[in-house]
Amino acid sequence: MASRTCATPVVPGAFPMVGHAWPLMRRPLRFAQSLSGHGDLVEVRLGPVRAQVPCDPELLWRVLTDDRLFDKGGPFFDRVRATIGNGVGACPYGEHRRQRRLIQPSFQPARLKGYAAVMEEEAAALTERWDDGGVIDAYRSLFGAALRSVLRTLFATRAGDAVVDRFRTSVETVLQQLTARMFVPAPLLRLPLPVNRRFDRAVADLRRGIDDLVAERRRDRTDRGDLLSALMTAQDDENGTGCGTGLTDTEIHDQVLTMLTAGSDSVTAAVSWALYLLDRNPEALDRLEREVDAVLAGRAARGDDVPALAHTGRVITEALRLYPPGWLFTRVTTAETELGGHRLPPGTTVAFCAPAVHRGRQLYDDPEEFDPDRWLPERARTLPRGAFTAFGGGARKCAGEAYALTECTLLLATIVSRWRLRPAPGCDVRPVALSTALRPRRLLMETSARRGLPK
Ligand code: HEM
Image (tube, rainbow, N blue to C red; front, side):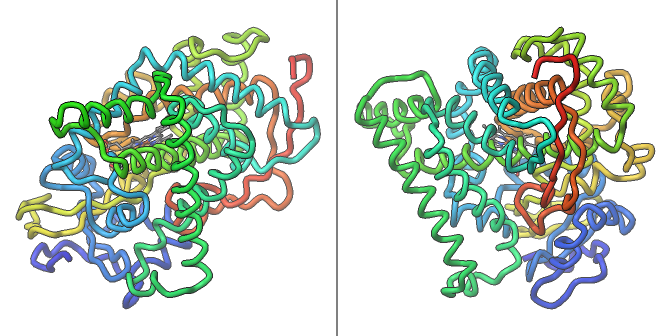
C-alpha cells in the first residue's frame, strides 16, 4: 500500500473502504478528466488501496515503459491473476519476456492477412443479419463477431454458434465484474452471495470451455499454425528437451483465457463508441461514408483496403482517445523510486488510467471534441510520448494492437458501407459501472439500409 511519504495531492471525495468507487462508477470519464486539475501525479483510492495516478503524459510513459520498476500488480492484476491466471497480460516482469516471445509469432504481420479474411467474413455475416428498419443493441451484436474472430483466428476453431454462445456469456460476466472486484475486500468475495456465485460459475464455465478446446486439439494433434498449436508445441518441446522454456498445462490455459478476454470486449467497445460518436458528428460520418464508398466501390471490405481507409482509421483512433476501452489498470513499484518529484516507496500502487491523460486540457485543444483529424500525421507528430495510450506502451504494449485496428477498421467500414445507424428509444450510453472495458450500457440503434448500395 502507498505510504503518504510520497505526498501527492489527494483527490477529494473518497469514502472509507470503497474509496473513489462511487465517482468511478457513476461518471468514470468525468472523474478521470478532473484528476489533472489536482496535479501531474495524484492520489486516488481504489477501495482500501491508495493509488498514484499519472495525469501527465511523460510520467505515464515512464510508468508504462519501465516495466521492471512499475511491475504488473496492485489490486487490478491481483484480481486478474486470481481469476484469469498468470497469462502474458498479467504475469510479473520476471515471467513476461518468455511468455511474450511464445505468443508474439501469432501476431506477426504475415499472420494478419489470414486473420483479416476471417474478420471480413464475420463483418459481412454480422451486417447481413440486420433488418432494414430493425433495432440492434450495437455492443451485443458486435461482441459475437469479435469473439468469433478470436476463436477462429487464434484458436482455429470452427466457432459454431453453440461454442460462441458458451464463451460469450462467461466472458461477458467475468469482464463485467473484474474491475469492480478491486473495490471489494477479498474476504467478501468468498461469501456465497449470488453475485460471487455468478462470477465463480462464469470462470468455471470458461475454464471448462478451454479444457474442451485443448482436449480436442490434443486428440487430432494437427499443427494448424495457430496460437493454440504454437503454445502446445512449446509445451511438447519442454517435455522433449527439459530446457524449461515450454509451457505448463496451466500456462496454456491462462494464455487462451487471456486472449479470449483481451481480444473480444475491447474491439467491441471501440467500434460501439465509434458508432455513437459518428451519430453525433454528421460531418465526420459523411466524410467516412465518402471514403468507404470510394475505396470499396460497392464491394465488401477486405484486409488490404485498410491502408486506404485512412479516415476510417483516424475515426477509430479518436474514438479510442475519448473512450479507451482499457481505462483502469494497476502497477506496483518493486523498489523505491521517484516520479514527478515525489518519492514512491516499494509496494506503491500506481494506476494506469488512460482517460486521465487523453482528456487533459493541457494536451489537446477541446479535449471533449470528436476530431479525427487530430490523427493526421502532421498534427499527431506534435504530441508528446504518452499522449495516446489506448494500447498501453513499452514491452507490455497490447500484443493485439495491429489485429485490433484491422478488425475495428473492417467492422466499421463494412457497417458504414451498408447501413445508417441512429440511436433508438431506450438507448443508454452511460458506461457500464466499473466494467473492465469501458463500454456503453445499451447502444440501441435503428438500422436503415443505405439506398442504392448493396445490403
Ligand atoms: C481496441 C482493442 C484493444 C485495446 C484498446 C487494447 C488495449 C490494451 C491495453 C491498454 C493493454 C495493456 C494493459 C496494461 O498495460 O496493463 C493491452 C494488453 C494486451 N492486449 Fe490488448 N487491446 C485491444 C485488443 C486486443 C486484441 C484483439 C488482442 C488479442 C487478440 C489483445 C491482446 C492483448 C494482450 C495479449 C495483452 C498483454 C500484452 C503484454 O503484457 O505483453 N488486445 N491491450
